[in-house]
Image (cartoon, rainbow, N blue to C red; front, top):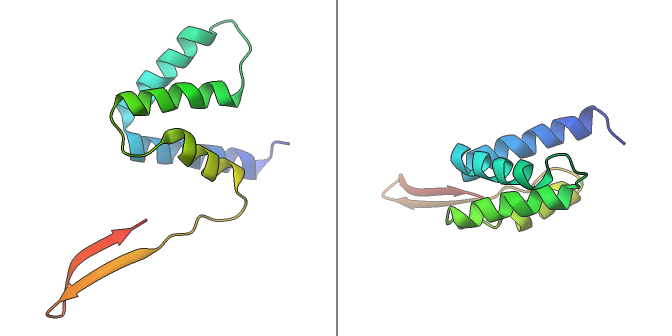
Length: 97
């Protein structure tokens, strides 16, 4: 079933891919995907496999396949947490995950 939520989540997923893995990795994954599946039927796992291979080749510390699985198969918003380290009233480290 496709609706505004599906398209919006898909667009957000692609935007996050660009942010996490970079434009060159995205282009490499898409090029590989289209090369293998030009004029053929395909499915989401095929696309994810090619994008994961591109991220792995780019030495990404994040597994694209695991990230996609979590992002696409879980309902509701993502959970974000932070870690703040302070010294003498000043923030010395701030991490958001």
